[in-house]
Image (tube, rainbow, N blue to C red; front, top):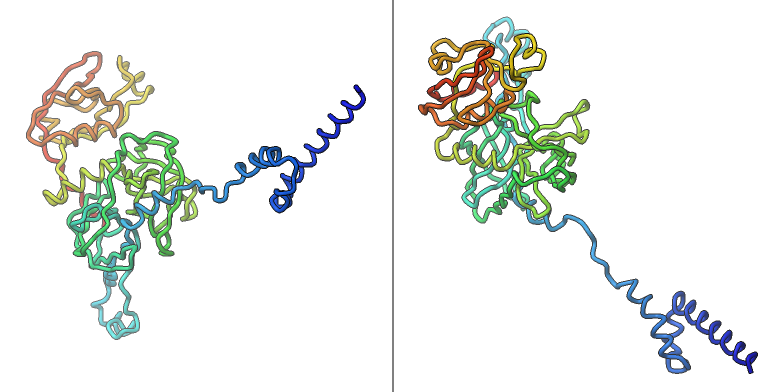
Length: 388
């Protein structure tokens, strides 16, 4: 009896093993013979996990929704610049030998390519100042193929932001995100027209925040990303995974002219503030005190035996300027502006620029061993002169 039971159990085990193998490798055999099988319940139990493990259509992971939402708002910008006239063009001998004016040496207008972002249904666009600087004619092309001439509403060279306007209907305006909520490691997409190949989307992460002292702009607070940014991407959109605008792509660090994984974007919040000032006033109003600042280093602090190690050393003061009239002297170290601590030159520039002209503000300085407060009447920062 025991031997019979052992043989029976072994037979059942072998049968189950065969059913499992057949259900895994050739399930269609079972479906054709389902009416003849003696163990339909076992077949269904064995084949159910296989069917659930192989769904008919698995969803693809990606950022297509974000790209689809933001891409229609990104445009290509073509800036036409008149060719520079040769300074010897009026010399008759020069004109004789080089046939100036007869068409042989006539220069064609220069074409600059970049990108822009539609930020309102009324036709306002954000781009970089260096994309349109000096342009005599600007054209934009939308993702849907429409083209239009653009008018320059205003530009701010110190942040490299410019505002354009086009007259078209049904413009797809992008949604602003909150760039101050970005964190290092967040996924971002860069959208633009690199090398004039057409609209392109690249992805990466936020590599760093608050990048400054790069020598790109006067006021720097860049988002650094490894999303591929190349020539032609300038003025394009940096968006989050929801397709919301978090930055305006503006510069890259490159030894070859192409992307090396270090790109910089102006935070959307900063670009929006500049845009609103340009639309409202035609320029950006900033505070100014008229000093030459320099970061305080531990070596300088030790040399002058200062009790502070952080602040901004004033190396020069404009004669009869706001700082001079308020009592700030060369050699002073600025540590606070209107109660806000400043530890480097960029923080001092930003804190002063945020102040309204004609207001009086307390500025804390370290003068040798003594900490003093001086009151300075803030003036309006002179407009930056365009580079020639």
